[in-house]
Amino acid sequence: MPSGKVRADLWPDVAQAPSSLRARAGGPIAKSLFQGAIKRLPLEVRFPDGSVLGLGGPRMVIADPSSFYARLAHNGLIGLGEAYMAHEWEAEDLAAVMTVFAARVSKLIPQPLQALRGAILPHQPHRERNTVSNSRNNISRHYDLSNELFAEFLDETMSYSSAYFADLDAPDFHLLASAQQAKIDRLLDLAGVTEGSHVLEIGTGWGELALRAAQRGARVYSVTLSSEQKELAERRIARAGFSDSVQIELLDYRKVQGTFDAIVSVEMIEAVGFEFMPDYFQTLAARLRPGGAVGLQAITIGHERMLATRNSYTWVHKYIFPGGMIPSAELIAEQSALNGLTVENRMAFGQHYAQTLRLWDEQFSRNAAQVDELGFDETFRRMWHFYLAYSRAGFASGYLDVQQFQLRKSKG
Image 1 (cartoon, rainbow, N blue to C red):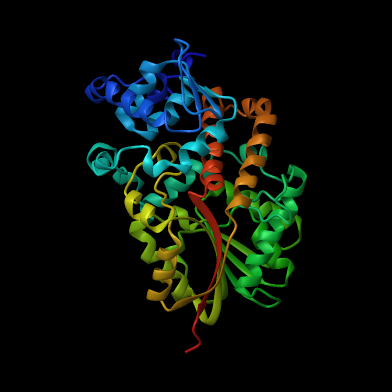
Image 2: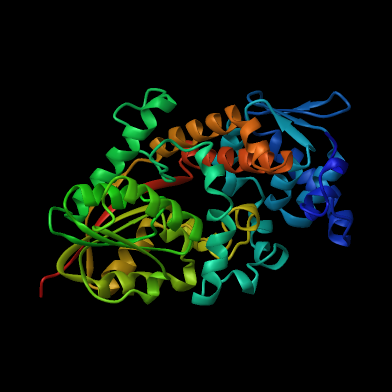
């Protein structure tokens, strides 16, 4: 389907390739840089004129080179994702193609040009800074899309974070729920959650962690900024008979009061933003009783790469997670120490996330008809497939990792 069939009212930057001066003047430069990079990569890139570039590997087919290069020139890697959404390039195995790019992302552009990224690439819009007033809208744009949408690719636990598999040898979807519960149980163990514990959960999700903590005999106070998640989580917890043990509130984590025996937070730190990272760790320290522990699960990135990209505005920011930033393990350790918390345990399991994302992507594809019935169009489905494949590539290549941390507050 050509990009002209994309609904311009819903997808204005996808429906038409950019025609700005930067796009027109930079198109030939983008072409030269892209083709120069491809010649060194284990890819097979095919063009409409029959020419082929690359060293061989996963196949990428460029259907509309002029629009493709205009998008790269205008918006960098944002343009790569928008070109895919617009059908200007295709891939039989999108995750495999993106993994090749992710493994070499710091070397695709010549070093002298990388120094110019801050001057020529877009920056985070002011409205997407994760201030208390902005964060609700940032979270809502993703998590309030539709509970029914997320149910079309998540397992019955409705867990939207990396699972932890007993066996990484190509697990299937039927194993995902138990692997999600294993991940949650390990995190609750790190936080020391037992019968009688008073637990703060920062980022409710759809309630599975709060439910499993309550099954241990804990009392849980969970905060979220997603009204859709809160509604479904409360229904799930009531159905399980734990409404007296779990309280869920629509509240920014910075507004929480009181102290708790344990704190758990699963892949919420990525929504905090670099600017507000001190606020997050100050909150952990202030809300945790002396001697207590935090069980933190976080997507991480290499420290130097984090520093180089912390102010970047990416395709993921624009279409999936506004205002986010992936921290490094070093940043987590540094901010923990500044606030009297010690990292006592850390486990990395990035390849488990690659498998989790594979299973989500396959399930999403299987349920394409149901997604259509929910009112999400074909451009949305291509966007979501790109998001899941793009994310999977990050973990499969080692560019990204996911880690569980145990942070301890001293007794003194």
